[in-house]
Amino acid sequence: MVFDLLRTPPAPPFDPLGVILAGREAVAAALEAADLPESGGKEKLTGFLWFTVGGENYAVENQRVKEVILPRRVTPVPRAPEAMTGILSHRGAIIGVMDLSARLGLEETLASALQRIIVVRMGEGLCGLLVNRVGRVIMRPITAVEPLPKELQGTEYEFVFGIIRYKGAQLLLLDLDKILDLGVRPT
Image (cartoon, rainbow, N blue to C red; front, side, top):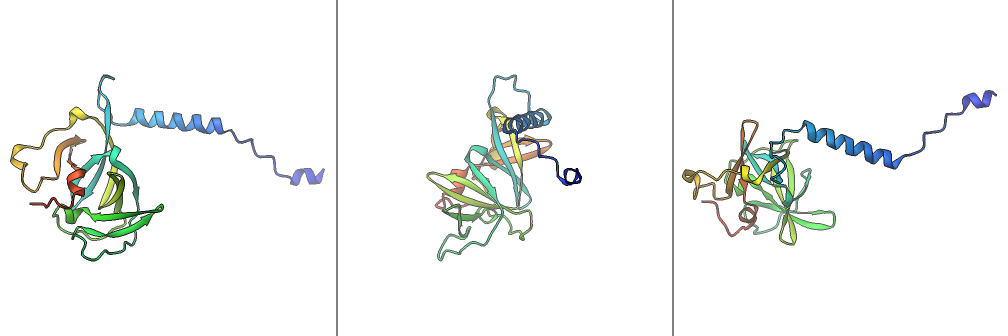
């Protein structure tokens, strides 16, 4: 009888279906609380990853983003373009890492704990973009993308193809194909 009191009660059985259903309920609750525009169910929403570089707000289409990782030591590559900080090995793949502030011609920023590398799809391969901070994914209809004002076209905004507004902020949408093409020089 004394030994029965010292035994720990058996753990409840693991319920994988319960875990899955609880996760679905949590996602549904998060989507309800999210700031999604009214689309009337007719227009498909597109995800845009919000991040900052050099104090400016930018975004890229989420479908091009593979993942966001913590910065790590990169191996410099001799005679690489100035914006390329080097390469790193990630999950068995060699990824070139580009300092987005250098690529955009912005003033260099100091390293911080908030910096991240956004791993994006580039054709068949991957490339990493070093940014100051990653915000969140914003869901908007593609029709919410505003064109760049004519006064800004052809200037230092040649890598930007549109603007999205979110809670009072204006996010400049980057053209990843132009950013990743090192033959295109910022003016």
